[in-house]
Image (cartoon, rainbow, N blue to C red; front, side):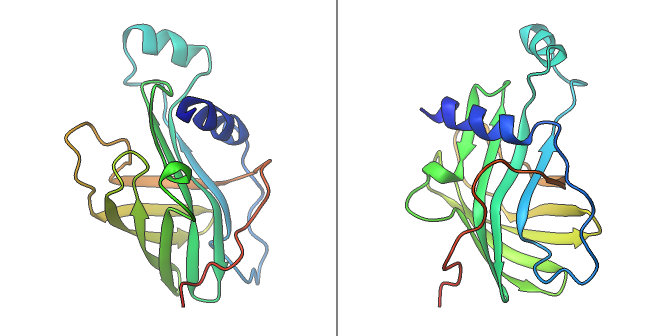
Length: 168
């Protein structure tokens, strides 16, 4: 089931980037964001699959800004989708919650694999969203959530936005 969910989300994001944000945009964090890994470090069967267009990535989807509150879901894949950390499967409700201060948001994210909670800073910089983990999740296995990532706004084919993002 995890692989199916990951493939559906990856298919919605792969190679589809939206136009630049409009001036005066009221909710600059809202939307779907993606970072697709290149084939540069892929080896063996993964290199062949990568050349065929199968890619790993890191995605923040259904990111919703309500005032200063921010919430949404994450998906991180490795080994061409064979390893997944999907926030949608981490329990009821969004896997990302945080507070926005200007162009920066401090968020907590819950791993779908381990249930552990980490922390990250999101920074809007034009049409990009910069992700930087400040507290890593603890796992005995390899962690698929990147420590640092530069995500691009992505066009989504999924229903948008989450109602009731605020935890107040």
